[in-house]
Image (cartoon, rainbow, N blue to C red):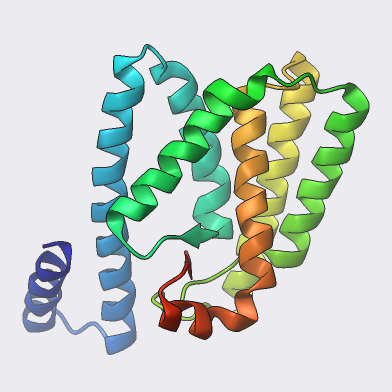
Length: 198
């Protein structure tokens, strides 16, 4: 359904504008991403809202806007697969992992590790996404690294060393690390239907 809507929208743009094919492909990707993300976020919001967890969910979501939107990561092949993985990540960050005590030393080590991962691997780009220029890749890397550093520094400043936001950023960077390791094997992964980059 989403692909049909995207195709109709792109056909309309072809007839009414003089966008290049490259621009149309970028618009198609953004359109499909927005549709899929909005549908998944509505469902997740309803679930976490029903259990009185909407506030930590929204805080985690804001953190991801500043990190994952630039860095990329891993996606499952299907909508429901991606939804299930997203749900498990959010529930882990909000409910499960905050029960683990994190010392200041461990926090600082994790912070440095996460910054290093961003500097080394961001952004991990999907083969479905129009190829980014070297300039855009550098910009995404800088934004991702700076965002992660600022989030961790702020959490350290306010004494929230094992908050849901800390864990959601940590889990996102684990995804980024895995995506970065397999970045050279994206074609194989997509062909096998295992995972895809953002």
